[in-house]
Length: 145
Image 1: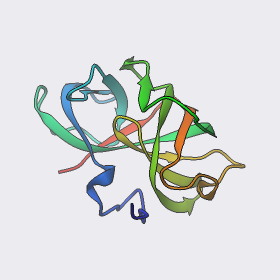
Image 2: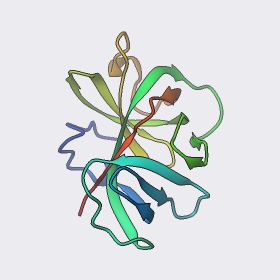
Image 3: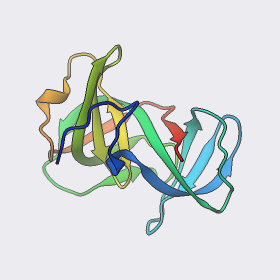
């Protein structure tokens, strides 16, 4: 796996979430993930242009609350319906250090850019490591075309 350069302008398709748009409003977007039971809700970064019931592409971003290396299990997002709270997945790459800390690209059924809380750095978790964490409310979805 290659290291990502930036969550804001990542050139790799590895950070693109492929989903179906279930509903949208000015303050909420709900997507379903094909082949799963997930119906996840996010805060849209900008108005969503996609049509309800059609496929949509986007980048998901959030903030991890204390990352832990996971020894067992697979990729998951809890709850299955609603705003993600507890997640587990594999680290795909890194983003630059910014005001909110290091950024990790984590594959947790969908790829998600996560900033880390103070005291943790992305370098503590090598690419390929399975990690588990709570995430802050308010994860965002940015539609890409």
